[in-house]
Length: 588
Image 1 (cartoon, rainbow, N blue to C red):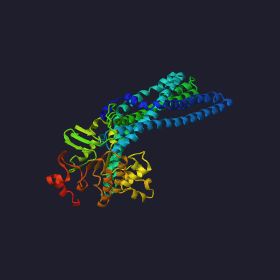
Image 2 (cartoon, rainbow, N blue to C red):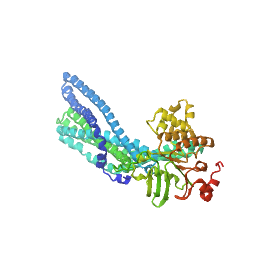
Image 3 (cartoon, helix red, strand yellow):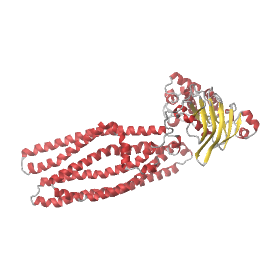
Image 4 (cartoon, one colour):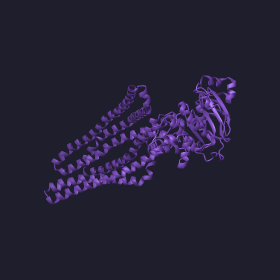
């Protein structure tokens, strides 16, 4: 579901879709409301006791009533404090449970989304949605729900008390509420668009921040600190201005609502003062009424805050549910095909066409067959579609037409998890998680033994340098493996692939960023990795693929030549030219 569709949803839809997160914790919700109600209930006693002390104890000059009344008032405040403390404890546990569930739900959904979803959205914006926007929705679910119940309960109870004490003064006190209602209606109708702009502004700022943190070496290398400072300042200024706009409106709205309450107090004093002078009302009764009126206007004032909270939450809700409503990578189908075990790794492409956009095909009628254990190399200029072709095999994208198969089974009928469990990928820029070397290697097979892990490391030619590290396999690699060299990261990624032991292997420029000395070490590791596996290899260095069973030469999304290294050199086409002008590093 798109953002535009979400914006058409009403507040009832918001509550209907979010209330499910409260249901598992209904006991905590009930306890939260109970303690909140008790806290407020104790405060309801305060005006009545005050009236009694003024009229009966002080007015009647009865010392025997004064001190017990004051001690009773102290006990009321004490129990109110205890009740409020319990409310905070329960509210915190309740709220954190709900926000934990919601964040986990959003994160699990992210894991099920297709790669193209992430291609079209910045990581920083997604991070903002998971952390900050979920928190905004949580605030209205927990704090907002509690405040709403206690607010309207307080208003109803105090209204009954005010009416029972003095109808005339109560009606006068209600006159300014028409101003409050008009103001609340105006604020509600205009606030959502402002909060939407604010949520987007903070998302854009986080996108730039995350981008800069990941590219800090490039920023320093090109001496672009001042440029990036200006860019961040511009994004931060957008957030500042959107926040200032929100708060400027709030600065006008909130004091206006407070003035409406103050006007009611003035009207009560204007009418109640003569009543006291004329003996129609005691001083204690007027003071008690004024206290109750304060308690009446205070929750009415909270309605304004609730409204602000709700408008902010509705803007955040759109962004959170944009994720939750996105279409999964592949809906689970009980009729999903299975692969016969053991998987041989027979890979076939039949008339495969693919487009990121309908009017611009990236791949055109691609067909080839890789038998189990064969190596198929893909060469061609940058942008010819090589990486896209192998991404289709891993089902990161779906072909526009045609068929891709493993062991004669159409992969479109396979669950993505099943398909990918039989494929290993080693890319040009290996990604390592911010953890230990052991954790990164075991990512290929989490339940592998220590012996299996170390054998994979030895075969990947990375055991020797790991042993030289102070913490060995427990050494932290840093964010994206920043503490290791490119060659070291690549060897760890090869160890990870070796441990996975999948029958199909994709190598995407696995040695493109490696120096000549390191390349030899990695090539040895790759030879072990490729042994007895069906391999699709993308490479620019011809010496890495000259022994391939098939070489496919791609240009503008099409296969224009195919054959062995010798056949293609003798053909004297594009491949032969690539060997001559694009591989000066080739050892002849």
